[in-house]
Image (cartoon, rainbow, N blue to C red; front, side, top):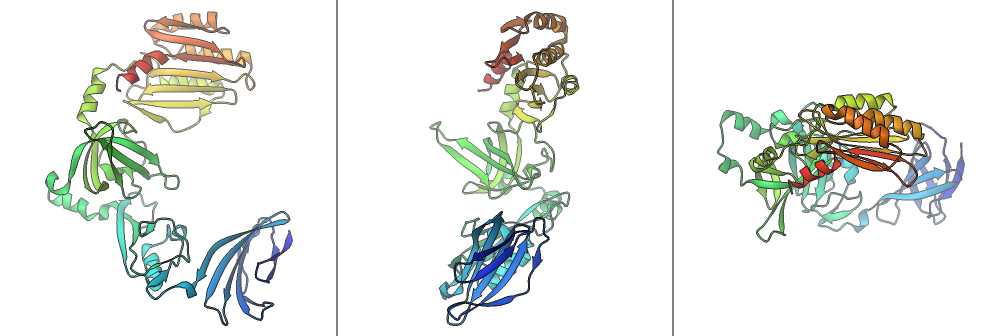
Length: 434
């Protein structure tokens, strides 16, 4: 336990006890007399390695509240101002923000709306995200609060009372009135949508906090070939909101990725999409059908993964969508890595790359792993020829083409061995889409 005395900056000495792993507890309110004769009412919240002091100044001063957080680091205290409320600075037509943007998130929207109304704000509206499918999110849970389009604000900030505030919250997908209307009475697309065209996917990022939600954006080029018109959602969305071809959880369709051309029917205003249906663009389907996918016949993602596991490698990430019906699977150990680009339809490999690290794996381990993979990461009719070439060449740099598939061995700058198969063929296939 570390007990440290700190000065608050206004004459109040505070003795902080910072026990490691202590449970949070609220201390009784205390009154502390300052050297200038004023009173400050202090409310202290403490826990493992920190203390929060909230004090209110009265008697001759307008109500003033300040939250200070004291973080204990060994024999040092770092002071952070969490927020300041100075009610004396609020004008007649102004109101003070009662909660920070981060404090509003995940609370029920009714509670948040009530707090802002009680604070004096009069222009509050709500928007609903009908995206709850499995019930992991509470009904009415706040996704975001925007004050005059500002989504990052702090408790104690002052705005005009009539500043527009928009509270966005989640509800069940089944409660969506538009969905019910679609089921009971088909609507002409021209009545529902004012955007119906092919667009390019410009953003497709999973949200860092809500793993079933995505940041999605589209764009279309105008006639000069350079300028673009962007189309974005007003918030993060669950992919299911883009139509029946998307799952509420799980991977996105193979044809939906950054750079892909998709067909979008949407209700939009000034580039903001409020509802939409996204499908695979007809032109992109035709283009992909006209180019043969350069898979290695008889190869198998599962077989390559199984052999790699025998050498101590494990999966590193979720398989990455590389477009045109392909994904990349990555495995690694301390001294070996392998990347496998494969067809999502047949699970056959298109391109395989091995990189080893001589400071973390022995030369014997590197060679044995490369030889084991070489015989299975290739067209199986050529397996014997490929295995023989690798056995004869491993340990030196070289390349060979066998039945239109290129195999390469290379020695890195630190003596680490590298091996690849199918890279030029895969690159040529990818460039055919540009």
